[in-house]
Image 1 (tube, rainbow, N blue to C red):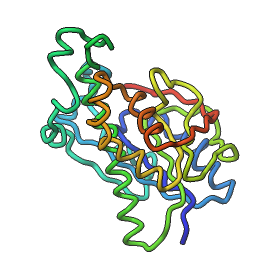
Image 2 (image 1 turned 180 degrees about the horizontal axis):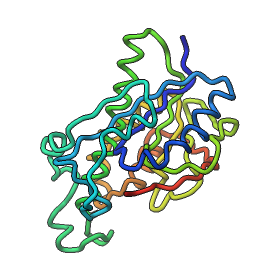
Image 3 (image 1 turned 45 degrees about the vertical axis):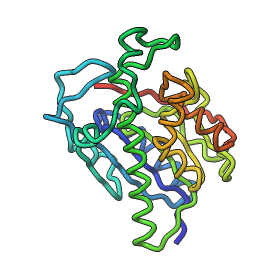
Image 4 (image 1 turned 30 degrees about the vertical axis):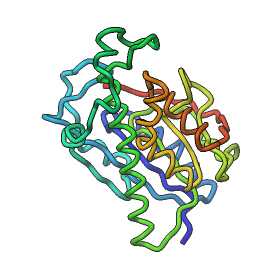
Length: 244
């Protein structure tokens, strides 16, 4: 069987119970209405003592590990974030001396250390999410044509614009906003081939770090798009991240 879309949810399910209806209405129902076969995967993290951070701040509200159920994913996986971070050689991704000397600047500085670790967790979750899809393909014998990468903590305002997608191996579909210093890193629709490149971009991080000392999430997307000669198709798909 051929699956039109694998939906890969990545990152923390910290406000999913507040936003899940918008995912049902604007993503799942749109795919169903257009007779598209899809299957959902959700990869997330278990946090030390359940303690959450927003940006650089620790908040009192602990994460609710049951929230993922509101999205009712076909496949679910939760991994230990502390173990992942402990296994990373952070010197490959963050220069403490530059940060302490110059701070969050391009003039010899680096990105906020907490933002770097948050970013690494996000792209690792995508990588593990794609591995879940690969495992499904291998065990089921089914194929997947395209992948939607989406956060479980966003409130969606627009219907998924499937009629404006460009779904070839040369193109990545990104929202037409929030590119900041590069390209939007919060949502993407790609072919299966490009999905594997996109979700494994941590492998390009160290190489990019040698070229651009201060890396942000959006800059890394721009780097892989340029490196792998992807065309960007900007789509109208508005949403907001809802933080606890």
